[in-house]
Amino acid sequence: MSIGGPRRCAIFSQRTGLFAAGLSLAIFLQLFTAQAAEQKSLDELERVFTREKNQRKRARLALDILDLRLTAIRAYVATGTMLEEKAPALSAYEEGVSRLDQAVHAAAHVGTSKRVEVGLRRQLKDLEQIRANVSALERPFIEALAARVVKLRETVLYSIMAPKK
Image (tube, rainbow, N blue to C red):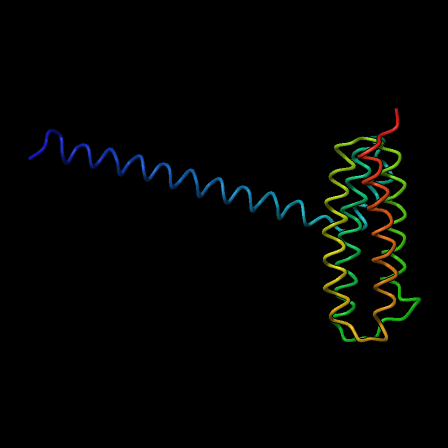
């Protein structure tokens, strides 16, 4: 028999149990806070955006609003209804891109621009998936939105590479 065999095993299992409990609590809190952040509606985000004075926060909020607008386009496409040029989801997304453009240029901060650039890259991937899921008649509308996002992304990238003095 080893020295302190059963006692050593009990201490190890207690440490393992505490570690597992702490890890599960951390995971639960992470999921809970992520879910609470996602529960903000589009109207709430728009109200917060209009009240916000900090330009960096406004840019982040504009990106969140754009994400919700993209979700609305996905939901519209999922219904099976044909996209039209004047579809409310498309015009709202176009408005969101314009708002993000203004907010990012007003912020003029490299960290904010990088975050927005990453978000726009994600948006482009999602728009490409949507484009693949719609008919050939609907693709020009999605491609026009994607072109607008590409243009904004390039502008943001150029502002990161050559910031104004």
